[in-house]
Picture 1 (tube, helix red, strand yellow):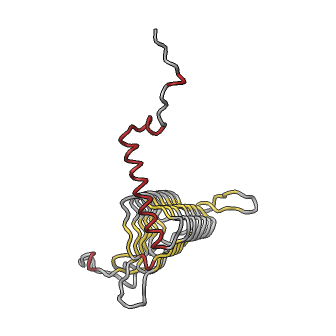
Picture 2 (cartoon, rainbow, N blue to C red):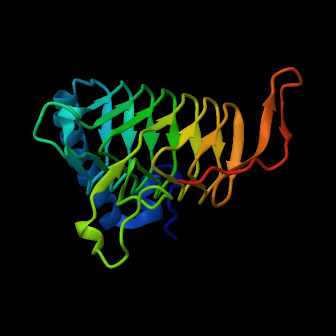
Length: 228
């Protein structure tokens, strides 16, 4: 009887055993191409530690400034839209150090989007500082005007440092998110979220605030949202 020596059995890598040869080869090739693309874009942006996934769309890099340790998953759309041929006004996107965003994120500016350091953003998050037209009480666009013919109207967005933004969040024009905030999944931020608060809902309202004396998150009454 032939007895197999367990010590001599070939041990397959865990990833190969779990996913199969095809997926492992695809992942390996993706790492190689992603690394090369990240290196070239990082040099253009003058950032040493830069990583970006496949299927990205980047435009207006001359108006975008990012810090070290930038990491983005597949499908990032990062665009500064210059509406003027003159030097001023120009769009601006500024992102601090240690920024990470998961799959299919969308960050775009015609005016200004500023994001602090140590910010983590989930999948399918939209941070856009402009609308096609204006729909407030003082300015409005006629509904019979095709949306593509309505002017892009921008209002600055500011996001502080140490912020965590969950999956599916929309940060609308004119919104501000204070330092240390947590924004729950699928929230729509249209106004001001004070520092060290947790906000959820459509439109987003604060539900908790961090108490530094007791070192805990404490419930608070639902804040009145600000609409654009």
